[in-house]
Image (tube, one colour):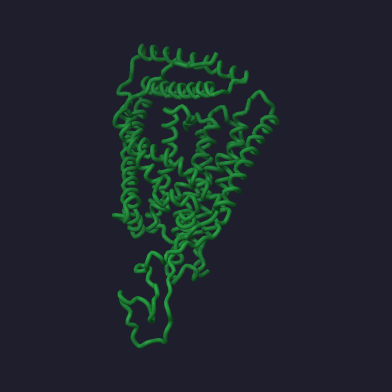
Length: 509
């Protein structure tokens, strides 16, 4: 078999099966009771989307392992790679783009359609929205690819003469070229005039991946920058705000009565908004009211959960309280570990990416040393750091959704997540997963060198006309670090306070 590594193929197949089974488990346990035994197409899209996102993250460590097949070759083309990684990268990200821009919007439009309409009308309405989206995307992609779909590589023009094989070369730093005459054969000593621009047209799949990466990078810089701080700090402050003791029955009745009044107000507000929507009111004020009700409902659910924790009932009340205490201790431990990972990420970005030349390879060296201890230990740590960024994106989107009116909130709750929230988060994960891979391949370029991901995300993307300057000047990395710093300051100042529901709704009726 030569360099063909059968073990890597077996591992890849086993990992794909495990990823699929884990995503089915998550869907079954996170879904809302109202979606049980129905909404099968959105569920299929959710499992497929989560599987594609997880596999795309795991493909970068697989790409590194795949390149190890050629570690003894003189050049990369002198051996047969185990997996055709470049083709796999392009296939996965084309599927990613189709899911994000076509399939998931269709599933969301169908799921959120008016339940009073027939299935045929809901499918027709969803198809109209999807076709409109497809036409717009196709026009934008076609125009951009035709106008600026080229790659500009900066190269140096070097030359040297030839002469008979001498007994002594006599080459040194002062005379690096063979023969006499004016030649520039050393890239280090060549004059600036030797720089040339080599232009070629990129392939269309690579261009689609590049544009999807740009869109995902904007969202990743915002949500990821906020989330990498609020993810661990949210867990730590959740422990700080935990209920310290069980309340009395009279206190429970008083709080439950207040929550019951709040629930009635929310129900009345939701019914009024539903009547407005059926009457054709879909303006900016209506959407603002809908988001306000959604956020108040989310806060009400959190208050109910907290009240149930403070007054456990039933025969196993003491056991329930003990599990609640252990749960908050687990949040504290996970929050501290997450804070260490977040600080390590931010320190690595500053040390390795923002400072030129880099002060140290930092985490790159850590992964390499872990690989020396055990072959897959560094790869596992590498995959963990990439997955952590995806978790940060979800945490950042949830936090901003609670505080900004123009961002819709789609929280993920165990046993209480509707399919539209599932689809929204899967779309966000898929869109940001491309950017996470690009971000990781750049951040860990020393560890992931000479891989197919480096060829796509390192060379082509960073040389694409009109886009390369965003990566040349580290725009997304600076935005990520700045937003992370601001979020740390926010949590240190007011993030520990518990926000109470306002109870005010500006209904147009």
